[in-house]
Image 1 (cartoon, helix red, strand yellow):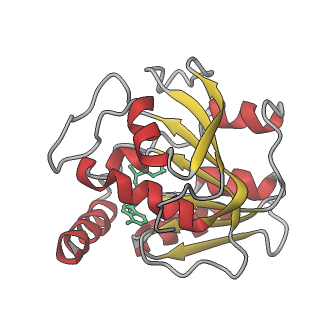
Image 2 (cartoon, rainbow, N blue to C red):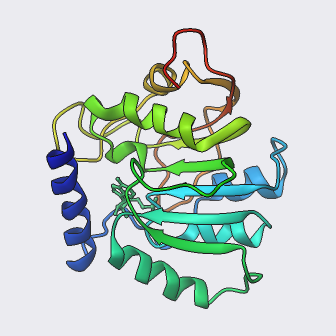
Length: 216
Ligand SMILES: C[S@@+](CC[C@H](N)C(=O)[O-])C[C@H]1O[C@@H](n2cnc3c(N)ncnc32)[C@H](O)[C@@H]1O
């Protein structure tokens, strides 16, 4: 398991070094922008985690919106790219940090995250590991906090195997999250960018106290 993950982490660094960042459309998604700017769902302006943040568009946006944000990526080259991009934006000191580490093992700050945002990160989690993805968010998000998932891709991607992106649906998220989260917001047709107008779902999950029998 650990060996498998080490290899996969190296795979991502190689992608960044080779400039094979085919997922990167050069900007954040209008669906997230409108969700936050139009306050479609009230979120606590606390600390925020963006795992698998890549070049950091979303992490930069959360920091600009006043969330104390960590953009996390296992690739050191991704972090360098994100730092360069952040320099082009006005962000208040202390609101944004980019960290190179593994989502599954990194040491979170003393106070857990009140908000986390997952866009395309779940799509690269191997299907066999999706339950670990859900458990890890339960460890990282404080009770009462929120996980925002912009679920994509839905109408393409691999069903199984080792080559991402993996095709997603809301049922998969329920299976991975329902033990520790409850769905509090769902938009099955959020606004889309012309560069990426295929199906996606915006869903917000509230961290609830563990159910009886959970190990968390
Ligand atoms: C498909 S890209 C998405 C990047 C970004 N969310 C975006 O939409 O532009 C997935 C990112 O997750 C990072 N990643 C992969 N495994 C990771 C892990 N275990 N922990 C943290 N980041 C990881 C990769 O380096 C890559 O930058």
